[in-house]
Image (cartoon, rainbow, N blue to C red; front, side, top):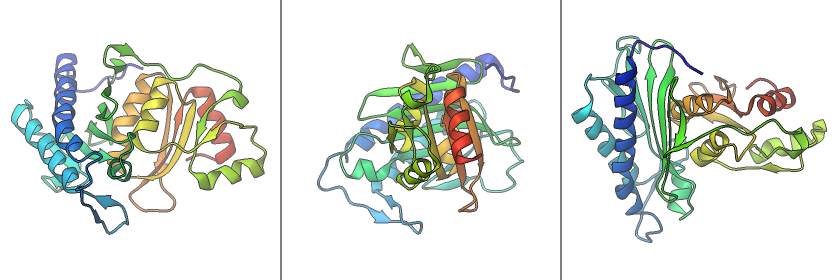
Length: 265
């Protein structure tokens, strides 16, 4: 689990603490609109929705990071783009923000939304720390390379090895019939979505999941969280959409079995 980076251990610890605090500061902004009948939203060009609070929450996170980080790392956010723009190899690291992952769930008053924040090494596009904060549940999932994965003070582990038919596997509904036709013995197929499902893989509540067409901000925090919880993270460029990623996450055995049935993500 331990991986070396050019950031020292104290620097990594300080940046993780900074990231956790930044996501917590966004929570009151976000919860102001949760189950609020006056909340409005617009459609983006990709068909997803965005609320004014997505943008406000991203600004809160960006402002806090800018005011408190020791080094001026670039930022890539879902709603406000990249600052400063330019050559992705120009700086060593950048922050990656999804202010409200699961905006549709948020807008409908469901609980499975959250703020995602990661710091990635730009040359490798590999996260060195990640945070998933779930405001409606009051839970914060965090990890840094070589530091383990945590929910508050609880150390996280992916699910233990268990027989494949006993696994809870999360897939898009469109893949359920595919696995049934292939004869996969899976009585516990589910379709959980967004960051809360990723957190449940790190917690060990879900054995594995597959999810297609993710943006970098959807997966950057998750990849280090699941890896540090002892899990497998398989990511590749999406076949269906340029600039997106397909992934399989889970315990080693369940992820390998899911890859066998679905093919490499």
